[in-house]
Image 1 (cartoon, each protein chain N blue to C red):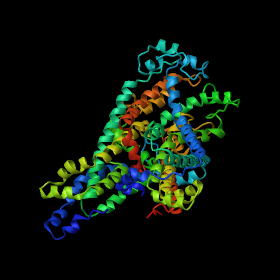
Image 2 (cartoon, each protein chain N blue to C red):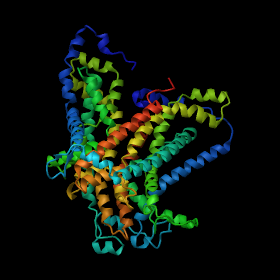
Image 3 (cartoon, rainbow over the protein chains, first blue to last red):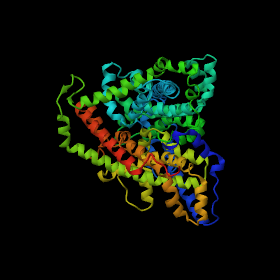
Length: 315
Length: 306
């Protein structure tokens, strides 16, 4: 199973010694062409981000005439003002926006609440379960684990429809609880991922603690969680980004204004702008602002996220 | 695992007796996750199967109708259309993405380990599908999108990327390729780093060319990684929904009514929950079958490295 199976192997493979390889001193042209391709790919990757930026600083009115302009057309901060609710309807319409507003701060708060609760709950409860699977002996352990893991194979939509019915029957439609509940206690991936790491943690630590009379809760909280801080952080970052970007589930159960998250709000905002002349500057400002928190997390934890891809491997 | 199991060392010692009483604490530790699993994975899976045998509109209790839904599905041309459209999407998306990501990973492996390069390539993956869809919807706009503007500069005809029934699916497939390319490349890159350099040294001594190294060394050794990447990206690719939902809404004329969107539409716009459940059961069986075939074909569990 890729490198998930043994994190230590992955670490070894990344050690500097493993990376060096004698490069044959020939065909410099090949190398130049290779660099050219890599740079091309990076440009294609980055250009849409630039285009969001360029459009968001333009006036929607002027975009049609200035569509060939690579710089912001008729530079203005109007789009951001519209998105953040700082512009009056008259101002908005003058710049080619619509009276449709994005109640940005509310949706931002909702996204933060949903992603934070999901991440904390999912990571904590999944690590408890992973501890029981990796560090305790009890009858039926492997069977239960296998059952958990088999759910990785089920396409989400298969359980999404009945889950929607359940949330509706519980009267939890359009509540935070309804949005976070299905992912709050576990995901099969999180349990699987953490169990792999807990299996690899040196047992002498907890044997020593046990002899000192520490029980499982203490060993779990004081020894295992601190030792496995890195993988837990990695999982938390991935869970947070995933929850932040989720669209399908919150669209089903949380469409009402008071719990609407940013992704759903963007979809609504897009469908509300007039089809003939959408408020592109407003839309791009909104998408940029909505993407900003995740991009900020990435800037801060970038290295960890990138390195973690090696061992999450199969997510 | 190289760590010897403590219970083996301590067999017969007091440590063993303490281990036996693990059942109670273990239940406490597993309880929250087990509850989550039972309520939100196991139970809905069973309930989904049952609902697929009923007529159910969410407002009145489900009525058992046997295999009627599955019968209806066989003659539902929109269902077959959805399968066809989805298959087309998956083929383009996975085809382009896998080849491009493999090449990109090999390029990176040979050229640089720069964190900046990897960070840039990962960037699109961090942004929500909805955002990616909106940005490309704007860039590919027929009238004032920059891509059509560029086509103009090159003296080419403008293209209605999302409006042309023949182009809508390839367009959506490539937009999502843009989002996943860097991520997939980094997964493969991680796999490449596990290939021992000695293998390449040996090949170089034997006078292998770049091309030979790629096809005779890299590719075969990468097989288990590629197999897993493929299984997962294919399953993910079948779930395309967000992009369609914010751009074409299934149009023009059902050209992008992919299976996920069709199920969503059935359940939440037409309130045919029973039928939607039957559709998702079929999708489940289909995906399980595809995953099984892929794993068999690629012998994913085995490695040539050991």
